[in-house]
Image 1 (cartoon, rainbow over the protein chains, first blue to last red):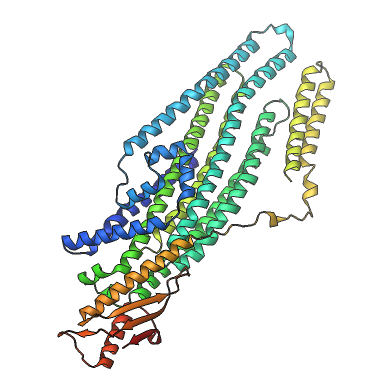
Image 2: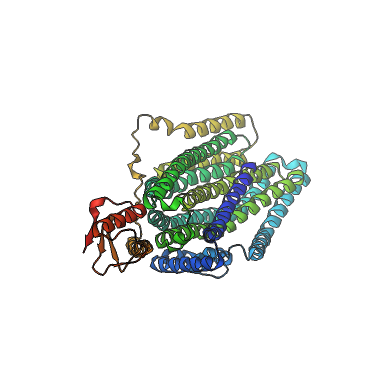
Length: 403
Length: 166
């Protein structure tokens, strides 16, 4: 649980510099010019250049993804992807944060209400089962008790597993939708990076992005998902019987899962970050030396205004950062709802276990609490994938900025 | 691979379920203890059964390869080259005009269909040259020298790529 909250906090922390980056990128440009009139003309030129360039870019894939995501549309405030990028570039970013909080609260309460009937039924069934066990006549012997346990357990399993299977499909859908977003955003980001002149960065990020969106996503869906399913099924079966216990086997599977996630995560992030930062600084140097041999180091106001070339590059860099920021916003819209749903389900399971334990069956309580531990694996899958995506996008946004 | 894993898990679950049902049906007695231990033994057997098969088996990792190559939006990059040449042309013409030489036409040609912006040649037309008072030189060769150094202070091109037309 602690790791989970840390991961979520880290995602939001990583999103916030992106926002700051964008706002600074948009406000820093006009500072170059000295007087107000020059300031305006520079801004106009920049606007024209940005609009020209935006017209040439193709956002159709991203528009499709946005149209299919309800949460994303909420976060975008009904704007299209293109409009959002224009808004970000002109500096209107965090205007409607209240609507985001409203959407968040709605999500939490909707999920709570959706889980409430199942929680109540499970608690009622297991308490009834426990009471029958306690009140049954002593003569009937042990096997009647086992039958009662078997029946209550079966009912509880059927109720809970309908939700568990829904959660599994929600998680796989989320991961595949994150992959679709990556496949749409990464080509545009790479194009913008090439346009700005970051050829070394492109050669670093291209393989890193391909690795993330094909190999790592495949490992998550084809190795980690089965491990989760196996450990869930085994935890179900292990609590069924009195004498055959599989707890240690389940803990082996869980630690296998955690080790795989941890290794992928650490190796990928360390490589991407170290290489990306180095490549970014090399590119920054070459952009500065190659294109403006002398003049860019002597800030003459008049010369800067006539620097049409500089404006073309600066607007490319603005668009690059805006695309990254809008992509991250779309990601937030995609993962917000499943993560909240999963977290509330985990909390509901823990609550169930707590209520069942004193009155009802000990084994049902232990099954429910094991299941709640297993469900954190799903959250960590979504969190890990989106964290790597956020990190890569953030690195691209930070590299080869011409300021 | 997946079918073998799922059959493995199903057999573990199946053995345990059978053991539970047998436990329910079986009457209390001394035999009970032995049957339980037999079922535990069977569960262990089922769990470790596929492990010996893993030894010495060649795994084929070529299936999970990185197949994706991102295609850049080249139309945009080509269009951007056009913007960059236009910007560079007006900029260079501006520079030259500020040095005191009017009506000089500068045209920059670059590789339009490349993702990187590389300048192939710069043509400077001096036919309609008007020399203003503030100009340093009047001799055409000196003027060419000055324009060349102006251009090269702005753009990193070799000397041979700048052509003058008188």
